[in-house]
Length: 481
Ligand code: 4AD
Ligand code: MG
Image 1 (cartoon, helix red, strand yellow):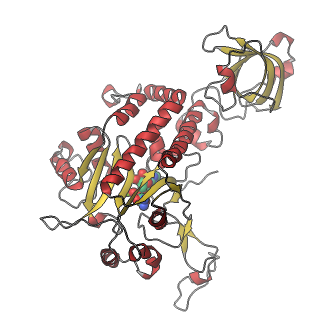
Image 2 (tube, protein in one colour; image 1 turned 135 degrees about the horizontal axis):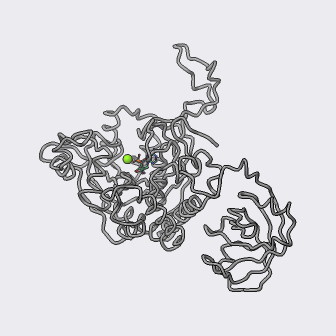
Image 3 (spheres, protein in one colour; image 1 turned 180 degrees about the vertical axis):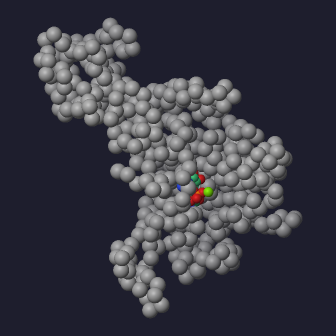
């Protein structure tokens, strides 16, 4: 490789050294100053052209978006804003970029506009920072589990199991939709389909993860999951990445401790390893907030907010306690909630979660012991309380500005209880035989949770729309690129 990455040059003190850089033009000012970026850093390096001795036609081709190769000497910069720059000795265009057609101009573009050109938005400072932070968080997740001797397990993307009940699923089929084979009774005959049965994209790797945990002890998955729920919100994607650890011999408290440790670890990692990116994103957010009225601006800047999470223990509260707080809350009394909390058993909407986290506790909250009826069949059942209320050992971690970041539980390890619950909610035992074997042969207490990776990236970058923290978002009516 003949060239040096710009990140390295920006830190270099080798003044006078001959260097080669390759990158894309961000701006070209006064026929003299080229800001070049090669993606290695959010920051550009400035290259200074001796325009009087440079061919006019070549100068015209130095346009925003063009890629070029520059050979020159690294010198101490006299200008403000940079320490080093390159005095150009040789310049060649590797790929032209027609300034009339290139959609990215050297000015501020809206996030909405950039979403429409997601194939080019990587070339902006904002998206360079976001995806560097995403990259760091992803690495930190693996490092966290590696340090704790967890086994990274790849669970299937295509599955025949539909037992999570997490939402609508995307079907996977090779049948001819115009003329599918039919059974005698007229239904589509999936026996004729590629897998000889009906299959879908996974909504969660948990059930397969449980199988592995019952052999390895501690495992985690980290992969794409798919939900065809028609939720057009700033927090939902149809394709998102989930981190799902599953631990044998863990109970709910151990599960909560691990989840809290994981979140703090990866946030701290990002703060340490992406200081420039997070500083940039902090300033972006401050700038954005200037357009808001004073009372809607946040008390904390991004870095303070992240440190606040690191420094405070997450509040652990039962669902039943949360319902009492919500019932007594101002927005409930004044009927400002869209869904009023009238009685125990109500499912919590995001307005309620946000009230608890942002107004009441003002920090991340772990809600536990939800009513059995609003949670998945596999969660461990508590003994009924004095009022006969039936809860499960569930835990959701709620974050300010995000809502639900983590969903998990201790699992029901008792075969009979699990079978009864499955029958109640209508899950056929036969289809789940493989899963039930964990409870038949050496069943053990175990627990796990799922972290929505994009929601984590949202929190750490201070962005507000989940479409801006995944390279190519899939949402209802949108699967571009
Ligand atoms: O709460 P969920 O549905 O839990 C599960 O799937 C369990 N099987 C996890 C487990 O115990 N192993 O999803 C887990 C997390 C949510 O808390 C949320 O952060 C994220 O996944 N999530 C989504 N993120 C983006 N878009 C969506 N449509 C999401 N649905 C869930
Ligand atoms: Mg959930």
